[in-house]
Amino acid sequence: MTLVDRWMSTIRTRTVAFMAIIMAVAITAISCSSSGTTATTTPGIAPEMVVDYIHTVLEADRTAYTKHVVNRSKTLEGKSKEDGVLTIEATEGWQQADGIPLPAQMFRLGSEIANEAGFFTYNLISPWYINDSHAPKGEFEEVAIETMIETGEPVKDYQEIGGQSYFSAMYPDVAVAEACVSCHNTHPVHLERYPDKTFVMDEVMGGIVINIPLEGA
Ligand code: HEC
Image 1 (cartoon, rainbow, N blue to C red):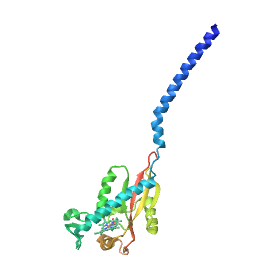
Image 2: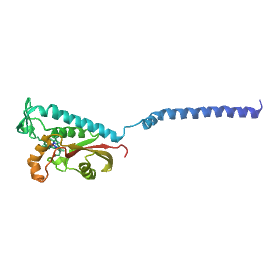
Image 3: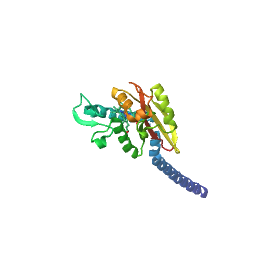
């Protein structure tokens, strides 16, 4: 072997070793980042569907509470119910009267606990609100409630509050029972604030709003 041959052979060996190191680093880099790559390519659930899921649960719980608890009570806001079997009263003043909350109050009590968890928020709102915390707030709610009352259809949109982006949805809350209409129409706060507003059956009385914060937005 000539001096030149030996010199070439050393370079080849070093090049192969160098290439091997590069390959090893590259493979490590790929395998380390593969979990990140998987996360971004895993199919997510569209926010439009997430709000539908949440709404289904909220509606189901409210209906179940109305049907299987409130409707079985012997008294609803001072009036006796013929089909009642439980010696309790469902009343707005449930805390003072040792009664049980009305469905809308039960819904609000649940939302106050859930909203504290900080994942997403939900609320019951209406332009004809009895409770001040149910007033439509912000541009999305003020615009969406008008559209929803007109069309009777849910409204979904993106909105920004204090630099944070949200996907928000509003679902109609309809007068499905005579009790909805009669209780609201004769409520002292309703009579004082909205003397010209008389709810009728199947009317949209308000809306359920759900806000999901969007990550990295
Ligand atoms: C016995 C009386 C009573 C009945 C029946 C009743 N509500 Fe209410 N509703 C109330 C009261 C009181 C509030 C305020 C509750 C609170 O303080 O959070 C309320 C709140 C609401 C709100 C939020 C806006 C507001 O007024 O504060 C909507 C929307 C609503 N009710 C719709 C309905 C629908 C729809 C039904 C029937 C499925 C119904 N209500 C049945 C008494 C009643």
